[in-house]
Image (spheres, rainbow, N blue to C red):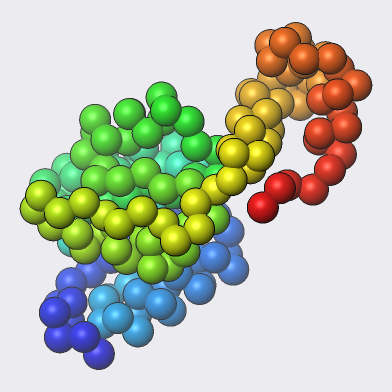
Length: 179
């Protein structure tokens, strides 16, 4: 157990159970006291009883927005450090996350090392760039998928907003995500 984090508590909020368990185990191995939540409601319930030093929060949850959890975490402990994780990254959400007090905004798939490094880099030090950043093709695909979901999975509307042919969009959506 790492003595540096022995008495520190972290709240991890994500609706992906497999990822939640994996991240929880990794943080526990590093010496943190881990509490898990799978929804905004569950996170608020935990935050009503306890204060946390750190938070790793998914942006999109089944019952709400992870930014609400960051606000509540900061309300309970103004010195807490939290990061937002999302599979649908965009600049507007990143700016919102930082404005409300998150220290970083990471796109999935972020590694556990990226998350740990981001949470525990203090002062003027910058978090080192990821070893394997998302490719330009992956960023493009993520953007297209996000717009598609914002258009309620309406292919014609998504194609119109992205200024691309509907059949081209259908071919892109039919393929697997680029690496």
